[in-house]
Length: 200
Length: 200
Image (cartoon, rainbow over all chains, first blue to last red; front, side, top):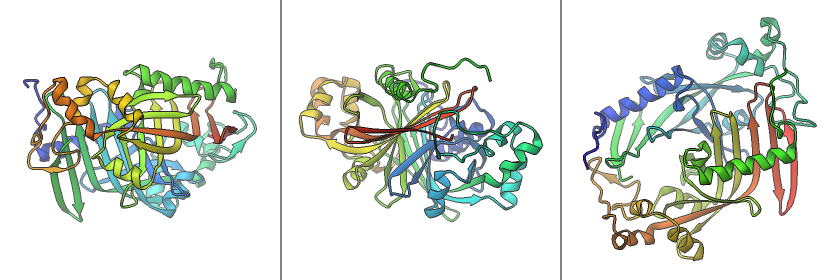
């Protein structure tokens, strides 16, 4: 088949670099499909759980990704019980899927949390001050209270703010290209990388 | 706040109807974000696993959804070991997220599988004839073989075809509206429905 293919198409090293580049763009560009991955966890009852999160930072060299959530949320309870996490990205335009596996650490009252809170916008901070906390049953759709949008009022949400840092141990690439699909798996054991193509 | 809100905004019954309507549109419209949910499962090693699937049918009354996969894939091994499944939908345009919980049944050699195969296109059928099967390590990105696109050649993929039917036991709705977020949970015990608003 003669469709043009990108430079990374048949190159494992370039494929991995492209994956990190796309994740990095997801942090910077809120319109990118990589801006809002799906975080998969093991539920308290053992069920698989998945929800959208907003990607806040990515360190390709250190192989970490960060997102923020409410410390009162179910996913924090789940990750506290079992830190294993999957992060799933899919761009229906480019037909590229990334599946990252890793282990999450929760940061609520440390320098990581402080820096993440300091870097977040007032609008985002508002959510952490909602009462009652996320997932609590309420009698009507709007039966919850938001703090007013002043710096002082939103500061109250700091106690509920949680930065989640996922350390990536494996990354799987899938590219549904017209010229032929490409799938690759990258696994790390410390700094040692095992990379291989997989049948799609 | 005075932003206009849709009719389902503060109505649990209409919210549930809207959720099923969006899923139904996802089946029919391949450009809908609801066309390609993320299926979450428990991995063989206990890790959370998530990947994009293509929604093939939806029966709102029977509360079932169907997608297709290769019987040789890891997710089939996972679902055979633990049928619990999460199906996650997110539309970044409307900012509506659906999280469905259910139990999956695998159909490879029965009337459900036959009907699903009969309703699939030749282009889709091709994938089930790829050798080796999905996820097998290969020496180069293109070191796999596709059957030619004739009816006879693609018929060989039938043995690898698997229809997955998820029976939904719970549905969670999240709508990040400018007028105020809305979150609702619907759970079924047989035909009995428990519906409630949740704090977002």
